[in-house]
Amino acid sequence: MDFQQFFEGSCFDAYKYFGAHIQDEGIVFRVYAPNARKVTLIGEFSSWNEIHMDRGYHNVHSVFVENAKVGMMYKYRIYIDEHNFVEHCDPYGFSMELRPNFASIIADLDEYEFSDEDWMKSRTKSYDEPLNVYELHLGSWIENKDDVNGWYKYEEIADLLIKYLEDNHYNAVEFMPLTEHPADISWGYQSTGFFAPTSRYGTPYGLQKLIDELHKANIKVIMDFVPVHFAIDNYALVRFDGTPLYEYADDSMGLSEWGSYNFIHSKGEVASFLKSSANYWLDKYHFDGLRMDAISRIIYWQGNSDRGINQKGLEFMKTLNSGLDERHKNVILIAEDSSDFPKVTAPVSDGGLGFTYKWDMGWMNDTLDFFKKTPKERKGNYNKITFSMMYFYSECFLLAISHDENVHGKATILQKMYGNYEDKFPQARAFYAYMFTHPGKKLNFMGNEIGHLREWDETKELDYFLLKYPIHDAFNKYIKRLQKIYMSSPALYDKDYMPESFKWLIVDDKQGVTYSYVRKSKMQKIVCVFNFSDEYHKNYEYKHDKKVRLKEILNSDWDIYGGKTKYQDGNIIDSICVRKQEIFTAYEEDFTTLKEIDAPKEVISKVENISYEHYIKMDLPPYSARLFEVVIIG
Image 1 (cartoon, rainbow, N blue to C red):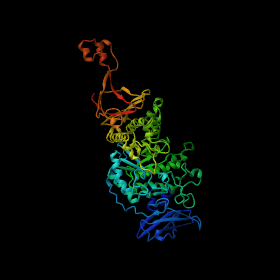
Image 2 (cartoon, helix red, strand yellow):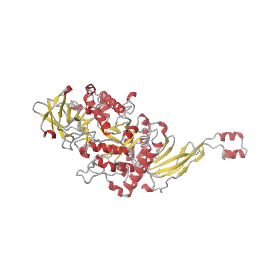
Image 3 (cartoon, rainbow, N blue to C red):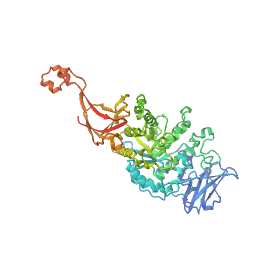
Image 4 (cartoon, rainbow, N blue to C red):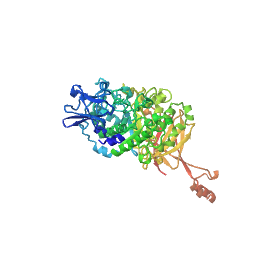
């Protein structure tokens, strides 16, 4: 390993040196503990008796153990003085025991042979393609009744997951953190094993196989990655060598708002640890991308802009993203960032942070807040729906309705909708039509697609029994149709981040609480019309600059989806031509008639210059959305 890079914070492959590695007829163990009095190794290969580790170059402690084998457990004893020690898992360990145990496990990461070479070469960042992400907690998505904990192994769940994603028209899955973690209730966001896939669902081999199978089905695989903080358990990174090696020495900076410890990104060996961890998941597991959690906590000191920018944090973030982008073709890097810090998705070479996409937290908060309001309140909050397009082109935004919006007393998405049980469904259908036609890539948390009513609980599978109820079954059919339209309609994803792909048609109807816009690509136009009020708008009218014919492709109020409008797929609406102004009531006939009656030349001249407007009229039921493909005929 290049130690200069390691201490500078520019090393991306420290996992190839540290940890437990197969070598000749045994295993070599290496651990970095510069301030330890001494380090010993214990494990199954020594009947848990101590083996002295030699302190070598740059305070790396190492030992070769001839009879150590893949699958055996081990720990380090880190002595803070001659007699007192703390047992630790390996910071670079590739596998770990199931909690509450914490021994590291020797693993062979080259045992599984991937068959996704073509996929890895041809994958893209999806800028001009549909990207529909299903966010998933692997342990609670579906219950394995044959397992004491209810968990499927990585490789066991592959077929079930792939079929579900295909049936519901998702082309990407985002796993909540799969790094080893001690507390189920942290959902993986407070990790102890930054190189170890959680043993809850099996082995490194099983996870590699799951990802390979997803790639065979043309599904992108993204994992949540947490570069901000780590779990406080004393067997992991906390005061690893008897001193704060990975964290700040001062608890005023070191402790996070979640009670975990903040990484000190200005320290070279810590930056190299995190960069190597991020690279490891892309390298050894073929993940297509990482969604990075709580990025505002790296940009600003403890996420507080009043405390100023953390320049070392910014430097870490830029070099991490640019380094990953250089090493992995078309890797997708997503920022969960609640701040308004500029150029998060701009290239590092242009002064940006180098992310591919950024979650649009403003859109999410404004839109969900709008749908919580009464119909009367919506008139005064009309611009909450329109505001997102005022700033949309400043970043490459991804619209995310994540797990955070379905837990902790926040209510699920369906429950957030205003009104009683029956009123929530039409509003949710209209809401999702707005989401999937709004510019930006999409992410939804598991359960949103079936109209989940119960807040997510990591100990229980989703309430799939809801699909036995006609209204939930109809809602799921609607979401499938909507997502299929999104996936197959270039107007809804091509040139997503170019202003020419979007145009408002109705953006000032505060009394009616209606909106309309057109999404455009070279080959297709889709007109989207929304009524977010509780009133029925008869003969709703909006203007086109050309004569058009509209073919209806989705109506959220169709009876087959639980609405009241009779299903009529492919319904055609033609525009109505109206002159902008009348020239003398005596000559209201068209231009041909005027010539036939020998009208005065000055009248004919005026009529020749009359411009025409083309109007579309349609009915808009309460809480509804209608989508039309445009056919230009004049």
